[in-house]
Structures are given as C-alpha cells and as structure tokens.
Amino acid sequence: MQQLNKLLNYSNIYSLWLSRGKTKEAAVELTVQQLDALEEITENDDSWMELVRISAAGRIHDAWLALDWPEGFDELVLCVPLCKLVNWECSKCTVGMRQENNSCANDYSLFGFIGTLVMNGERDELLKHIKNARRILKNEKYLWNIHKCEAELIKT
Image (cartoon, rainbow, N blue to C red; front, top):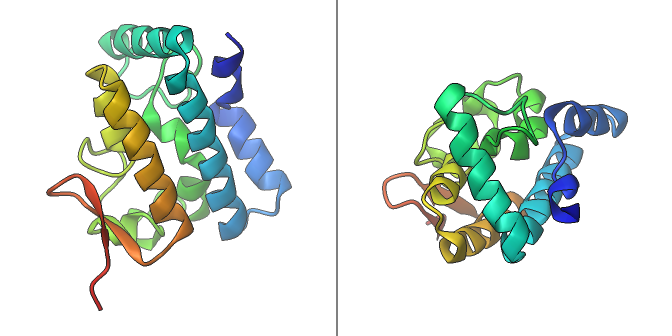
C-alpha cells in the first residue's frame, strides 16, 4: 500500500522538521504535507479500509498511538511539528489559539476530529474536514469552532 507509506511516522516527520530549521513555516508546511498524505490514503479504497482497520485495532490496546504509525494510527502524528514547535503548549500553537486553547488530543479539536471520523468510517466527511484543516493552517483568518466542529472565518 503505497499510500500508507506517504504518511510519515513520528520519528520521520520530527526529523524532517528539525532538518528544516524548526521554524513555524516548516511546521505548517509539514503538517499540510501530512494532511495531503492522509487525503491520498482516504481517497483510495484499499488504503482507506486499511487505515480504518489499523485505527480500530490499535485503539483497543493503546490510547496514544502517535508513535506507532503504521502499526497504529493516532491523528496527532499529523501535527507533530506544530506540537514540537510550541513544546506541547497548545495555547501558543497557531491551531490551539484558534480552537479556544484546546489540545488537538481532544476529539472535538481540529486534529482530534480526524480520529473520530476515521474511527466512525466517515470517509466523505473526513475528506471535507481535511480541506478545512488545510484552510485553517494556511489562512490565520479562520478558526476551528470546537462546539460545532467546523471551520469559521474569524469575525473582526
């Protein structure tokens, strides 16, 4: 499954971010790259079914699987560079600040919602959500409404 290999594991995405200078720009770019890989996985029938299987199997044994990809799936593997940029202090993160300072480990957060959609097998909704996540990462005029689980334009 070539698509699965495009999603980098914790060590690889972290090393890549370090090699790119540990900047915010690199963190955002690499997180978008991870979203692109997830989108490819989701669009392909075989890799989508494998992702759902991996996600379901892994969560039975381990609640935090960000270090386990591809044996287990945790949506936090997508945003490792952003987390490391702020040393896991969500209130300082470009995403955390725009989701009421909530951690992406929460099911209702921008990245946590990805895990919920995968676990529930909601493929079409996941594809829409990936586009929203990209929009939020690339345009700081958007926030993630944790109560409605949707992207919104920031009212000025």
